[in-house]
Every structure is written in C-alpha cells, then in structure tokens.
Image (tube, rainbow, N blue to C red; front, side):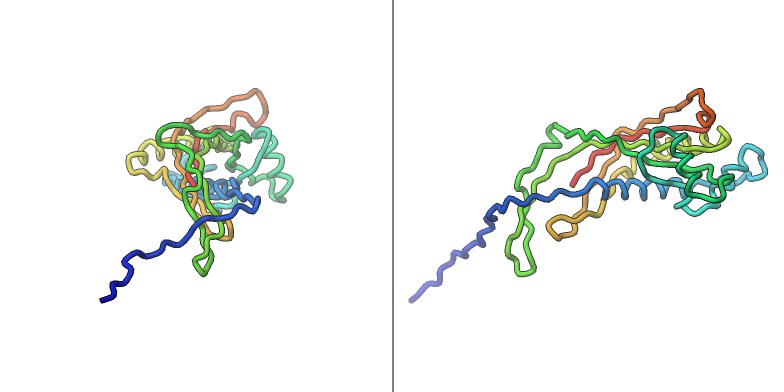
Length: 223
C-alpha cells in the first residue's frame, strides 16, 4: 500500500533584491488630512444669521468646500491671503478661508507600539509570484490649520469648532483614518492617527494678524 506524501511544499517567497526601492508619498497623507478637516469645517453651521457677528461666517458656510479650505506651504497668513487674492478676481470675497500646511521635518516614532517592521509583508503579482517585500516605519508629521477672516469673531468660531469637535470625538476614535496610496503597483492604505491636537491663538502686529487662528495637530502615519 502506498501512502501519499502528507507534506505540502511551501511556496518560496524569497525575493531577490534588484536595488530598486520605492516609498509611499507623504502627499497622499496630505490629501487625506485635507479631506478629514474638510468634513469638519464643512459641517459647521450657524443658525442665528441675523446677528452682526455671525454674518461673515454665515456667508462662509454657503461656499463650496474647495473655497473654504486650501493646502500648501505659506510663510505666514499674509502670504496666503496675497496668493489667494492673486488667483481670484473677486478679491472682496476671498475671506474667510482656511489653509493647511505641513512642517518639512519628519520625525520617526520609537517605542514598544511603534517598532520598525522590516520585511514584514510580501507583494505578489497576478500569478502569485512575489515581486516585492515591504518594510514599515512610523513617522510623526506636524500639520497646522490656519483660519483667516476679516472679522475676529469668525476665526474664533472656526477655531472653537475644530477644538470642540476634537475634544468630544476622541472617545469615539474618529481620529483614526486611512490615506490611499500606491507602492510596487499595488494600492495600499496608510493608517493615520491624530494623536496630539493643540489649539494655538496667533496674534501679530500686522494688518491681517487679528484674523488668524491656528490649529496645530500632530499626526503619525501608520502605513
């Protein structure tokens, strides 16, 4: 009687290095951050529209989201407003507006929960043949959201709206979301977590400074 071999040969997932290395793009995280805060800002409303202090914000809430929130690198709120004015014919109505910017420094996170994972996964092609190995690290990125308006009450309302939402949503874990990216020709989700939100009130002795409020948030991307 012949007994069949009960041992199944495992597929060899050894990948021969080619010297080619690809990294996920931080721009993908920028886009997800813009969408994340865009949903928060887009949900803000005021019902007492007849009150003088609320009129500017009432007009702001009627705009499409792409006219409320921008993303880019600016030296200060004044340079943002100047860039906004240069791109719009209707300069009287460019404000209120908000913009998100990311600090250029990238800090890697160390700790028991954030250890580097080297060669922790394998990407295969349509035939199941391995074509790449994936390593993962955790980084901290610092984003700032600045609100600009002609009236200080409008900036205060936007700043308080953001901070209140964060304080009351923390228990629901709504600070975690994903960014869509691509690596080795394969779609991947980058896990993003807001872990140190801070609200900073900014005042400077310049023409547009009384209109600025900043929301500083620290994010760690979790590929």
